[in-house]
Length: 306
Ligand SMILES: NC(=O)c1ccc[n+]([C@@H]2O[C@H](COP(=O)([O-])OP(=O)(O)OC[C@H]3O[C@@H](n4cnc5c(N)ncnc54)[C@H](OP(=O)(O)O)[C@@H]3O)[C@@H](O)[C@H]2O)c1
Image (cartoon, rainbow, N blue to C red; front, side, top):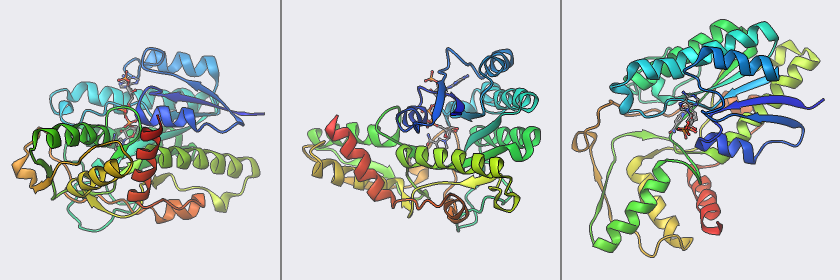
């Protein structure tokens, strides 16, 4: 019997990568916001009751970090109440859940990579709503849910830093202007392609564990996945320029100049250091993350060949 997996947020950048990399033995029910709106608990309940999935991958989320500061109620509803509604109906019907989450549940003050079991301390509304979503899902489903936190997500489609920087490199280089990018926030850029592979591996491993009843191999309930290495937004922007030119995506890269967070004020505060320690996940899934620069090269190659 194929695994039946219901995906929320199917038009998002991770949703698209999950659809493209869906394993042959998975029957995927992909739902965009019009088909499954996380603001409506009744819709969440109805769609799970209709499809009775073995798993829900909740890739749908309110991800506008700055706008969330002005819309805390909607962020909470989409990122916490919606996932809870999905978890409640799965608890009744027997399915499991993979809840995506973020490095922004941490405050970035410890100066070393975060372990999955560390206490969360979000700095803004978005991180607070995602932390609440994690808690709700784990409270309702216990070991039938997994939270997978990731960071600085980008890919060949959607709205992300890579695509914005490619546009800005082009425009600034043509105008002979520098491109100013924040250099005092450190994290790890993560490709949607690698993250999607980790999601599918997690589901396969967790399903095997369940079928075979091997309790000691139980996957942890909270896992971290990012690409390997560390970067500032400035480092990321410089590499996008270099690799964009090398792949023929850009005629010329703009000169990137480092600025501080104080030079580029945003409505939401962001962690200054939000690396995630992924070693436990890597061991549990038998999957090594690529260095972020290799992943970036691969995503730019996809864009260049499109
Ligand atoms: N982006 C990052 O840098 C980042 C970093 C760490 C963790 N994450 C987490 O990774 C996961 C995937 O993020 P992503 O980057 O793929 O996000 P994304 O590209 O912004 O996609 C989110 C999707 O959620 C959908 N959505 C928004 N409100 C919804 C609602 N009320 N009901 C149902 N769907 C709704 C959006 O629909 P529309 O297409 O209609 O807008 C969109 O398709 C999220 O859990 C996010 O919190 C992201």
